[in-house]
Amino acid sequence: MHTQTLEAYGHGLYAVQYEELAAGISGLGEAVRLQGRTMMLVRGHLIYPLRYAKKDVPVTAARLRRATGFRADLIRRHGPPPRQQAFDLDWGDLDDAEVHPDLELLPEDVQLVLVAYACSMEAGVMRIEWGSAELRREDRYLIWHRHEPLPTRN
Image 1 (cartoon, rainbow, N blue to C red):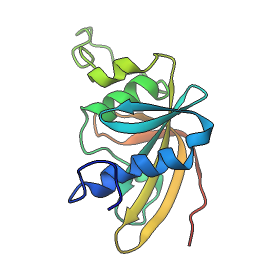
Image 2 (cartoon, rainbow, N blue to C red; image 1 turned 120 degrees about the vertical axis):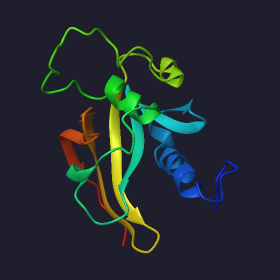
Image 3 (cartoon, one colour; image 1 turned 60 degrees about the vertical axis):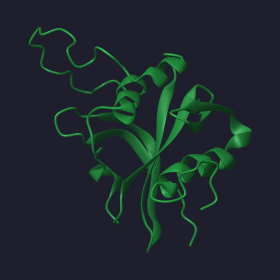
């Protein structure tokens, strides 16, 4: 695994997705380090890779493993506003008390662009799309506001 980190075993694919994306669009924006990863800011948009499946399923089936942590906070804070507001029981901001500390490194007006892809070791990249999505809290599914496919190399 040709990666700049020490994660060559087990998490190599996870680490290299950021490096490959940053290398591919390095001339378009500026690099920013978040969670020890190089990510790209292009004209006020953070470009973020997200492997959503190991099999060939549509991007509309994308779901996060966890409703908390860096990815969830990133999508909630910098993704599009929810199309349907949560039911307000006037319990205050119990869920949003703290955001991941690395997100404080980003300006608040940065918008998130997800580069979501389905891939496996056997089949390679099967689908890749980019767009913007909100994170539905109750089941961790991504609700796409817009998305479009990107060409894959065969």
